[in-house]
Every structure is written in structure tokens, then in C-alpha cells.
Length: 168
Length: 121
Image (cartoon, rainbow over the protein chains, first blue to last red):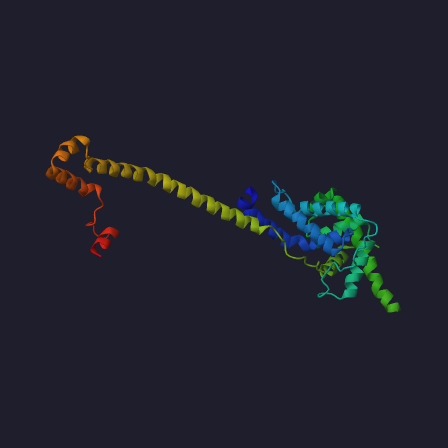
């Protein structure tokens, strides 16, 4: 009650963060193995927890990516082996064709998990390497180096597809 | 295969063409805030009402007491001492009774009262 009465600024800050980061956070959760709808439910509870919590994080952006990461690992750990993960797009397919979207998803999924995470955080989350390092519990240099390796792998993977299409 | 800075920019630009899907709107408990505000307004109104009651009450009490005392003072008392000699003489008894009737019986001549209206009928 106390928080809902006097936390109007907090409410607005939470909504602003959600509108800025939710798409990237959902895509990140999908890259960690959740389907889109589970990721949405999980994100709602994370933001609710953020708003109702007594302490506002000093760095909310890395905090949220870290919270999503932890929640995803918990979700996957508790998930039954029989549960099927729906094959839903992570990205808007109105802007690009469905095949390109699928191709990117596959390329990202083939990356080592730690490299994929840095790409998701830096490209779509807009986090600096410093912030990405905070979110992942690694140094900024390690984050930058993983990013570089990830781009090399993506370049190979994305270049391969046009060649494959030419061969067909 | 290594990537140079140009490659990095080109790959980044390619990746940024893809935009993550927007999720549904955030469903934060706004109703709690409305409820809290409603409760605050109700509590404030109740406190004002209690304050106003406490402020007005002593005044009305003192007025009530004063009226009562005033009434008590003006009310003539028909005592046994007054009635005893009057009983012996019928004329003086009439005088005592008519004098007391002026205040002890309801007055019908007070304007805009129910008795006044009824007495006219």
C-alpha cells in the first residue's frame, strides 16, 4: 500500500523501462531456450517484482538482463522434459522475410551460448560492454572479445546461406 | 576468418535490421493505486467530519444547557404551599391555575407552528 501510494515515479520508471527493453529482454529469453509466451509471462513477473521491491537497482538495465537470465535458467531447470518449446519467431517478420528471420535465429542458436548472450545484449539490448559484463558477471574486455568471436561466426554463417541458395 | 572494423559495422547493420517482437503491454496493478487513493480520500473525509462534530458539539451543548436553565427559570412552580390556600377559595384557585397554564400548557399562539395552524382550524 505504502509503495503504491507513494511510488508513482517508480511506476512510471518501470513502465518506461518496459517499453524500452521488453522486446530485447524477450528475445534474449528466447535465445536462452524459452518460447515467446513463457518469456512474456516471466517478464511480467520480473517487472512486477521490480516495481514492488523496496530497492531500485542502481543499474536497472544490466539488472533486468541478469534477472531474465536467472529466471530462464530456473524455468528451464524446472521444465519437464516432455514440454515442447514452440518454434516462434523472435523478431518482427513484417520488416524482414520469414526465411531471413529463421536463418538469423539458427545462426544465433549455433553460436556458443556465452557469445550469443553478448550479441543479444549489445545489439538488441543496447548495453555497452561494461553493462553486458555486469549483467553476465564477466569483465568488459571478456564481453568485447566474445562479441568479436560471435561476429566472426555470424559472418561465416550468414555468408554460407547465399552460397547454399546459389547451389540450389 | 577474422573480422575487420568494416565487417563489424556491416554485420551490426545487418543484425539491426531485425527488431525483436513487441510483447503485450505491462500489466501493473493500477487498481491498487486507485483503491489506496479512494481510501485516503475516505479517511480524510471521516477525519474532517469527526473534527467538525467535535468543534460544533460543545457550543450546541452549552446552548442547550443555557436554554434549559433559562426555561427552568421562567417556568413557574405550582407548589403545595401555593395551592393549599387556593383550594380553600375557588376564585384564587382559578387565578393560580390560569397563571400556571400560560407556561405549562402548550402555546397555540406561536406563529408558524403546528398547534397554531390547528388552533385556527
